[in-house]
Length: 273
Image (cartoon, rainbow, N blue to C red; front, side, top):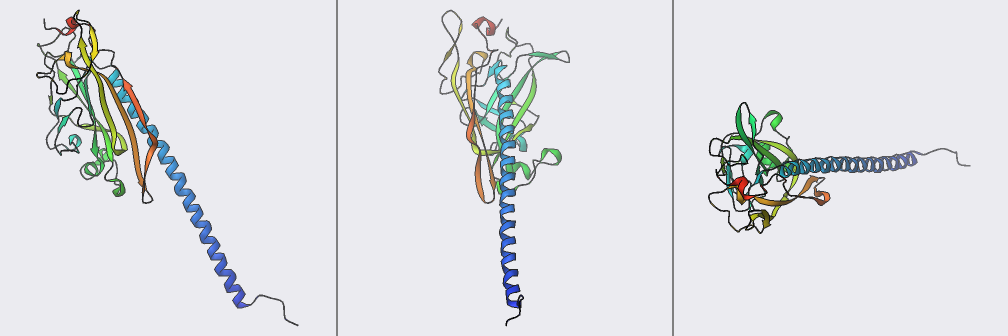
């Protein structure tokens, strides 16, 4: 009669099977953890993009002037990393060709001086910023996502001076905005994921009342208040590379459309005194 018990070979086989099962369990836990982390990151990114889009919409809705397509803008310093156009490597941007929105807010008094705030929203290359920014200005290294975009906002108060219109805007709209620097608005934007279009521009009928007309192919020079864009559409799409693959977040772009409420209603509001 054979003695009951477990042989050494059986113990080895059981150990191998046990290790294999533990490996499968660990891989499943890892996969589940990675999936959970991706879902959490996707939710945070979607929320960040929606908040950024709402902020841009708020700026647009209160704008007194929106730079029309065809306008060439130079912002900040030529060597400033926070204003570098990823398309041409300079601080020069062309509205309508580059993905950018620029506007002037209504005039206000600040320190006893009448100013208008220039605001511009635009993308930067993430790897470019990470390699140059320091401290809290740096969004953090992530080599797998160096090609992604960051959404930035640039703000600067401009003195109106004596050459002003009845509504407080400068008689000639500035296109060179010196000094200052941009600030991070949203991270992990898909390259090409900030899309801007201008369906209409401001016009005036024979009675001098404001209306919307197609935007001209080139911006008039000099640029004046009556040349404002009248409506802006833009969309935001994020993208994260994780686990060797790119995932777009959200699955469909967030879309926004804004018509500013502070544009002149009559030509007399922007006719020089």
